[in-house]
Image 1 (tube, rainbow, N blue to C red):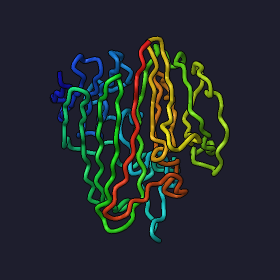
Image 2: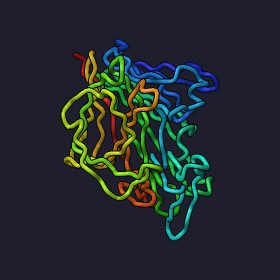
Image 3: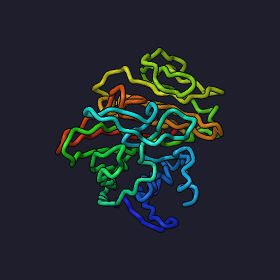
Image 4: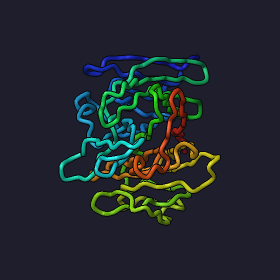
Length: 313
């Protein structure tokens, strides 16, 4: 039996679902609105905290389950220098001294390819950018491929192609929210070898230091821990890093290719209904500090991977 694909209206958009033959593993995406994830079910367990209506998706509260590019986090004062010229991103708010998340949160991707096989299914979306923003005048093509594999695994491949005439700065992140326990406080978390990026308290921008953080070196419940922090992986760069989120029905493993995605952010929103674990290709303020920043030459591509796996009890 083949994996399955189904398309259906979702307000003014189209949502696409791919699933395994038994329907135990399913994802639903809306390419036309930043490939927003509407459903994430692995091993029959709904582990994604998602939007339920087109209106919620368009409002995009807390940037839930969207793509973040060409910068996945904060940019100091919205400013950066590139090739001897200064650029200014719009600030997030007049009283907030940074820009955040770039312009990918509502980017209109197009579905370009569906492949259904007996042992996997993949769905590829594309965003073509012509460089029309004066604060980022660098054209590129961004391809995202979501692949469902057996044993309850989702792999996401990112590929950015520079079709301009100069080297471009690029950063990428994903902003998924997860629920594996009835309460976030009951979620058992284990983080891989990493250092916390130290930030100033007001703007949450890097000070330049990284500090040890070992609260979740061993698996333990979140309890009342609140996080909105970036971490830099310090383990073997040839391997995948794994962040574990465990609940009563099993463990969700968040995996990322350390060579291309050496950073991650953990965020517990104020409502404390879910936990965001965000793979990031670069550090906070990377357009200025260049830590992890992809520098893509004309006619070249950069490719990276991350994903999820659910291990049921």
